Length: 334
Image 1 (cartoon, one colour):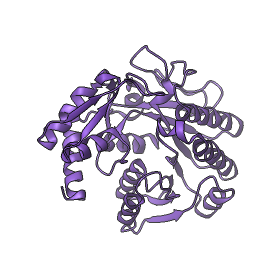
Image 2: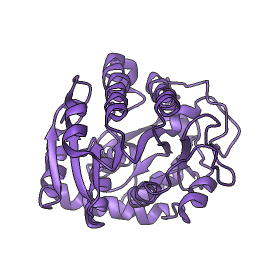
Image 3: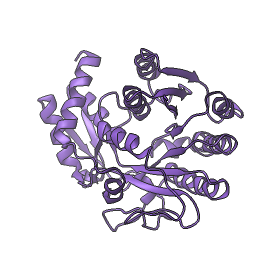
């Protein structure tokens, strides 16, 4: 029988690619997105338009935090899997507009958990972020690390959703996997992401701002690797009292946390060099101090992901950047 997935944030960068992968695997996909104007809505509309070319895709334009919206969808479609990607993203924007993070991330996730309590799916996969590791300095980050020192309000709301999900998993026996993703990049990405901003500036002969004077590292994860991991985790359903080696499985709930990252941090200046190589021109760089809420480095231990799915992200940074710049040139005709 055809399985049904409900994907929130389906017109977003990660949501689009996740929906496309599941459609290619034969799933029926219900895609919910609010089409907010945090960035160019045209990009979101184009992504949904491509998904709508598949007979297996149904788009719903609603805010997940609106009471009853998610419960109605759960009752109507009885999803086998729920992949919760909708969120207000961005470390820096959370300083300017924190209320939007409360509404989308906290209230929205609460509505999702309430709907799942009423109509339980076989598995729920909820997006968290590497930003929850905050001020931790011991690397690589492992799922067992204590994460009580978030550096931004965005990260704090995502950690709160992990805790909310754990309580519902314990109280209502809902199998939940929280995946912490690490600096995802690729074609059709968000315009506020570094690879997008740097490419646009370099191709338009404009300077780029590089924070902490370039002394930063990120564990960049290519979008295809991320969606492959998400789809593989769907059938790795957490079970009470049945951990795998090195598991983060809760001792009191069918709830686990999984890192999704390359496990190979790249220096920011090397990342910029990859973009320069793909663009065929050098960047003009304005070195600046660290921005509030940011962290100097991220690095994922992807051992648990490999144990659960048999693979881990591995796309080299130049390969991924070449694909992004090729898409950018085509999309914007530069």
